Length: 223
Image (cartoon, rainbow, N blue to C red; front, side, top):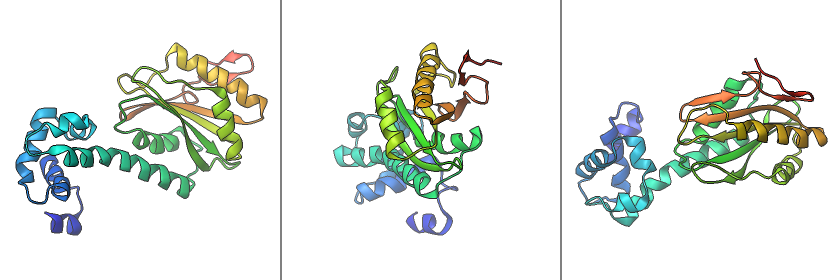
């Protein structure tokens, strides 16, 4: 299976085969095929296995704490990889779709709400995706001072705000709208443009800019 992966990649693998291959790294002397099937039966899907609590993973027969920690590490490593790649590629984020292409995978598998500020240069190229806050499933605390510190540190000319809704739809709440207006005022005070606020929910995203919801001097502009 390892040779097959090296020759063909992972696209042709079924979910249980991908898990079997991953588990073989942590459990080289076990029948990882049986364990992979047990995990999928217990948690329901490939993604649910990787998102599961390590303690619950370890309780599955044949797993143990080491293998559970390894599986839990995979989503975190994926986000770290995408974070680093986006930073070094300096992608140009001049369209909502371009921002979503970076943000959706960056927030994949997160069970808590997180808030990012994408710091951009004068050409709308990504300088740095700054993680401002990590919270609970329902809310996260975002302080304007933290946002300003990241913007100044990375010398951003403009920014895109983003957060996720782990258990909901990609639509803004009243709090989301209020926070956007508040941060707009703060950024305006230091002459930094707010280009968008993107909400991510699974594979879906919502763009304030695309939906006419960005703040203006006279309040919120709606379609």
